[in-house]
Image 1: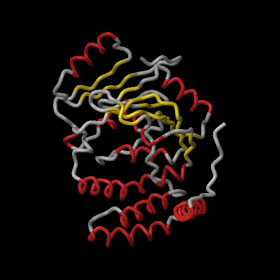
Image 2: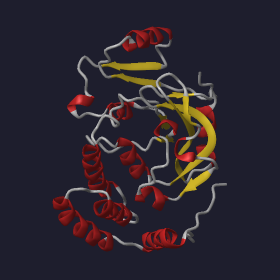
Image 3: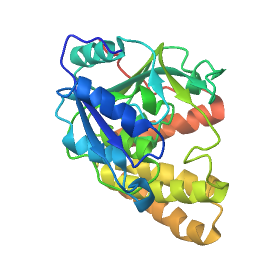
Amino acid sequence: MQLTSFPIEILIHDDASTDRTADIIRRYEVEQPDTIKVIYQSENQFSKGKRPMLLNFKRAQGEYIAFCEGDDYWTDPYKLQKQVEFLEKNPTVAFCGHAVKQIDADGTTLQESQFNILEDKHLAQEEIAFGHLGVPTLSLLFRNYGNFPSHSLINGDRVLLSFLSNFGGGYLSKENMGARRIHPGGIWSLRPLKEQIDARTLTLSKIPQLIDSERKSLAYFRFFIHSIKEDYSWKRKLKNIPLSFIMTLFWLRPTSLRFIFARIKKKFYGTSHLQQSPCQ
């Protein structure tokens, strides 16, 4: 349904689906062979620890990348056009996103706006490097910087946003242009709470390696907070709390220090003086 003034390519990775998905894809592939480019897997790659998203990144030729996973879908035919025009006008912004509604398996609306994105918002690089999670993955459109980090981590969206913080800030639009489907068979929702914490712990321990020196301390500081407040394993706490604290201090830079102070002040007093220049 997307209507654009520029050419696009549609990269599809079918991870050995067991329903009629592959048949439907082949029908569209025949109709638009120059636009739709497909990888058909005979064995499920996700179960082997590989990330289909990364396989598509490597073959993306466009200047910008957007993705739409699984059962999610876009609802505005001008989504890509609007987002590309925004990034063209704002070269210091690395990615943009927008509000999306959450629906159940039958299409009934569960929430009008995931993460309650009710106003336009600019995200500083420091906020993204620290681990801002209020960006619907379905809504993302970002510049194709190439050399995206290879990993087998489950929390791929967190890894991607952390990587993008090296190149610029972000922007979220309150305009709702997509639908995220929530169902009990989700890869993440099926995992027990301890497994989810294990996965977050591993991801947060790896992310500082992806962040440039100017903001690396913020990634360590996020890991420090997680280790104190969220991790259930005392064995990991005894190792990760002092390590992440020391590394936070070692990599601390003036901009990161200001961000940390502003966040602490907001936590205790409900206000923050961290300012960011709006995009023009």
